Amino acid sequence: MKSFTLRRSPGPGMGSTVALMNHPPARPWNLCAPDPEKVSDIERKQVIKPLLAKLLVNRGHESGEATSRLLKPVTKLLYDPEGLPQMKEAVERLQKAVEGNEVILIHGDYDVDGITGTTILVRLLRILEARVEWHIPDRQKDGYSFGQHSIRKVQEVGATLVISVDNGTSAVEVINELADLGVDTIVTDHHEPPRGDLPRAVAIVNPKMPNCDYPFRELCGGAVAYKLAWGLCTAISGERMVRADLKEFLVDAMGLVAIATVGDVVPLLDENRVLARAGLTALRLSKHAGVRALLQVSKLTNKTLAADDIGFGIGPRINAAGRLKTAALSVELLLEEDPVKAREMANNIEALNQERKDMSAALLELADKAAEEFADIERYPILVLAGQGWHQGLVGIVAGRMVEKHGRPAIIIGLDGETGRASARTVHGVSILELMHAGSEHVLRYGGHAAAAGCEIRSDQVDAYREALCNAARETLSPESFGPRPLTIDAVIPMAKVGREVQEQIDKLEPFGEGNPSPVLLSCNCRLAEPARATRDGKHLMLKVRDGGTVFRTMGFFQGERLDELKMGVDLHIVHTPVWNEFRGERKQELRLLDFAVGEVPKLGNGAFQH
Image (cartoon, rainbow, N blue to C red; front, side, top):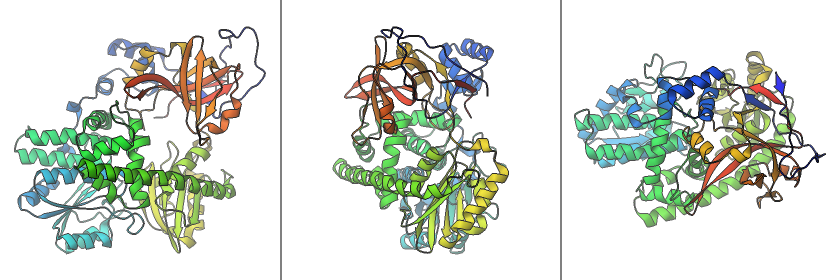
């Protein structure tokens, strides 16, 4: 890989003294080298600043209609729901059930995607005064998707129509059994369809179905449910213009779609970008007591919301209930309209979220210990770890952290006696679902999508499962797929020039997330303005970094263990993302520290963002 070194020059007040101490960065650094002609072309045609043009080219964009849509993601760019597979059949059957006063059961899922999608459909059907019930499987007792618990719930409430949210495409056996009982099912889902038979549903509304002509296949489950709601609103209105009260519902419901879209880590591109951007505004303006209470315990009231506020604030709290108790608590909160009750419910979920953090930290330590046996990355390119009593509601969180730490896909299995349930996460560019196909004979069932999946397995099959997946990975993947992923830098900018103008250019690309990474800048030859500190728990760094007279508050999340590397009076080179921090109505720019080096400037590889 081609590399080069930035020339070091003394900063203000540094004189000619060269610091003797050196601490390299935690990861290799690559600097993007975009085609100057493409940068100039997009700058001129889009009438934008040079930095923004460079950021766009670094992410694979060129001048044209697609880039114009990206810079102005207005709601008129959303695609017609009728383009989704079997949407017409789904809307017709749902409208018939509403008008015929049938009992409709919304069958959700226990993660943030299924919870918000369930809430969307229940809210709409209540507005339409339909007879609606809802059901969320218990993560520990019922497991993912449909099961005998689904049939019991249908019989309990007397439903004649079931609508799944974020599941159902692979639930062949149970949906077929419901059909034999005379109960219709509409599947709304976004997971990859099974290789074999499909369930006998009235409609399977899923953008990942074969031969689907819908322009965008990466919708989350909540967004697919929203599309069904939109289709029903259009049909009920009897014309292309949706009636006023239903239009108000659709605008408001985008807040829940934003939570689902960011929380399920689908690419924030194309239609997802439109939904997330409009949804963040709708979320901030929401009048629902449950949503307001959730924002309050997340400390997100009276501020402009960003995708990270969902990813690190709202989403984990919604998921906490399903991980430790029942996801029904989160649905009840989002549906609650009494402010006093909502506040009490939100406080309960906040307590669960804190408990979830403590338990996750303990489980992560156990997983780290178990991983020591499988440290040889060539022999074990996939981490498959299992433990008796490992909390099955937390294995997904731990799997994600293990991927970050070890640079390879991870499957974490919580065993309970003779069986266990697992969550799987992966590195960029490697489909965990494709790898899991290789071990299908060793699991009771499995499913998911490229970035995240799950399975159920017998305890005595774990070793064979690990061997099958590692064999498949060695045969199909290159060594470059694993190991520490280089940190890709968009541009080198002196910290003294990182001001409001730079921030305004960055803001045009919000919301950031999967498929649309936050801009990454390198600022060299800085100094600490005061001694570095760690947070009380030692996990995070808190710095004040200066370049001449410019000083920025800088936060380094999960880098507290590097505190001893930071000393006063030593050259500091930081890789960071500028962000806004709002507190008590005051908005200030600060830096989010991604990595740093002390002493000499590290060599920079020549790299590019992976799309």
